[in-house]
Length: 220
Image (cartoon, rainbow, N blue to C red; front, top):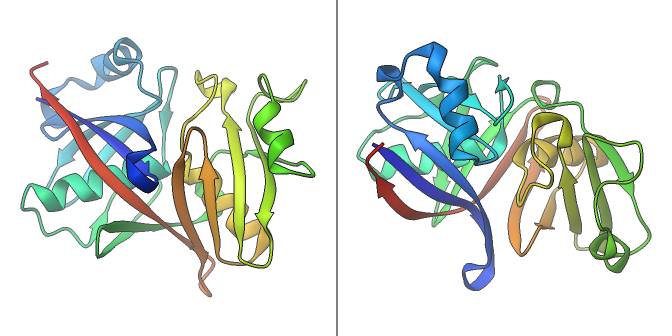
């Protein structure tokens, strides 16, 4: 059974990055998971191996990731909605604490767990929005500008071409790295209208969060 979610949904239901989650992912043979993720075509697909313990694996269309933001936020939300009381998720990178505040699901991760995104700062949100693709020579880039620096609002687009994704609608792992780099709490507006909340913590982790919605449940 495949649950299809949208993660980091913005105001009035805008944006949100599609995500596929197999809650019975342990039943999908390891050797077939990469092919399944490629066939589905989501930026990431999650195979939950043990829902009660939060053990899971994450695949892009091209490779497995030890840590990723929107898959972990979305899976945490889905497990809670399915009645699993999970205080932490356990992807290959390590233990990822989970908490819920209102309709926002938060997870915490370490910047070094995330892919090594290059950070390209532009002068204005309009310049970010005008891009036709990643800056030349960059195949794993987060391009951003301040919308309101004092308030901590950022406009971003992320191009993880190296991972098999031309452009990502909402990228939690990039948010982890950017918030750590800036050393302050930020709210990121990414893609067509997704919203990501990111907050660096004293222990070196960064907490990210957002809203998740269920799109459909498919037999697969």
